[in-house]
Length: 361
Image 1: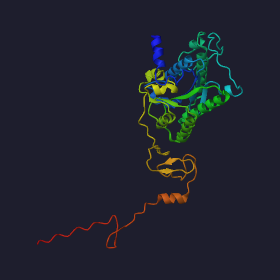
Image 2: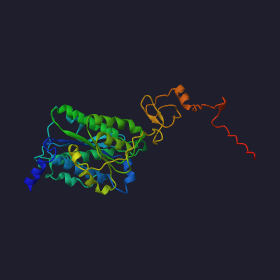
Image 3: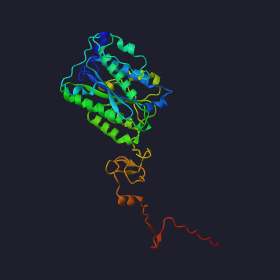
Image 4: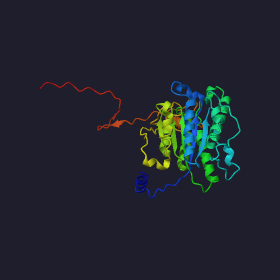
């Protein structure tokens, strides 16, 4: 059977041009951990379960190839922070050492005490000396940094703002730095965003900047969306060639992660994947959040508005609008009078004259 399978693969169309090279893969995972965004999903799933599923998927990614690597970034309330690895790992070393994955007993002696509300009873798991070393290094760092994040989190409704665009920018910056430091080493890179929050008009510009940067670097952005749909992230996945999937059953998240999002971009053309054809590319108003067909655009930051703000300033860049331009925009449209054949002008709203009563013959 193995011989038959090998012959079939060798004779498949394009098999000669696509050599079976074991190219390493870099997976950057952005997790939205803002507690305010998880409140509406309390009846469906918990942040703890989502993190556990992501940990399993990332460990599976590391297990496929010894050279595979993972970046984990938390989009928290008010800031985005690296969970793994240390962002300074590439700062002073032009050739960072690889993690030894062949010595399961050579583990770190650093202890960790994860927050019980986020990771349930992981202390015994991390103390197991038979854990694959790459798993332990990543899991230990993620649990420890998450504990610090939630211990430092203060309830503040003013931080009801998504930091996913900033987290994506951090991932792109780290990937670009790795390409410069490890010049000559080929590695496929992609970004996986686990998002729960909705669209926020103020984050439209940074989101678009991240999308175009990822497109220029040829890095696909996959979106694992929990909760309601996100138009911005739909555009991010479509423009960069990634996958956007709205998770309807969060309890089966691990199945989505290890099937749809587990496929490397280099072989996605040969696999039947979910396609999203209902993407709305229309712009939305930065004030009301409604879709705009015809509106106003700030000449400085290209902010889209459906109405002129009362303070006469752009809500994004705070530039003061030209009073003369606003006066022209506030004018009512000019209605040109229609000229009839006898030379008299006829207004469009004139009351029609009833026709005379016909006389009997």
